[in-house]
Image (cartoon, rainbow, N blue to C red; front, side, top):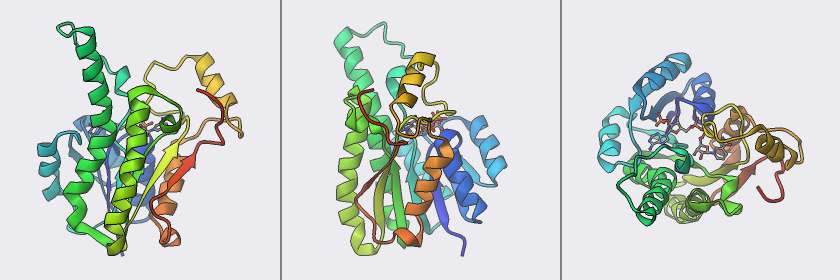
Length: 242
Ligand code: NDP
């Protein structure tokens, strides 16, 4: 039977690889994001449905609900990123106000977005289903507000697993290391830094979006029915400082 799947931020990078995996299984896949054109292109490619939604905005998440399948088997909270790298027009702000703005933006993008979306759809999550949130190795590396938000995501997931467990729904985090070929780093990654990140892995290579999709697929499969409240690190064995 086709499963109902929601992949937030599913038009690019890791989210798109995840969405493509489920679509290839014949599942009914909805992808979201803030850019309509990017979403439509991705949805056409995988044969899914695209809905524009900013997952930090409760009203936008509410507007998303009628567009989703009545029965949701898998929710992938993937939308997020390091908002320090977004250009913000904060000329009017003091330095401390700008710090607070950026800090909150990271918490909203990476933690609130997942909590809000899960809360909104929790009633239609089906028994035997799974909530999988995309964390980060940054949670363990002292990576400022972004790392703190991803660490918060793992902590929040523990409570979620307890809430959903009695309904036979699992809740886990997949925590990637450096994944190349996504929009994540924008123009922030110098060749030297990239080489350093790769050299810090046991496997000596960057991850690919498909590597993360493989871990998500496993956690969403019956083979993982007894795995919940966990963080699955998918980072090529990255070690040391960033
Ligand atoms: P991308 O930038 O390609 O993917 C992020 C996606 O999330 C985009 O499609 C973006 O679309 C969407 N998004 C961001 N904010 C929102 C929002 N508020 N509402 C809706 N959609 C949103 O990078 P990745 O694929 O690499 O990142 C996916 C996830 O993986 C993120 O959570 C990231 O933190 C995590 N991660 C990535 C790593 C890497 O090395 N690449 C390492 C560890 C974790 P749009 O801008 O159109 O809204």
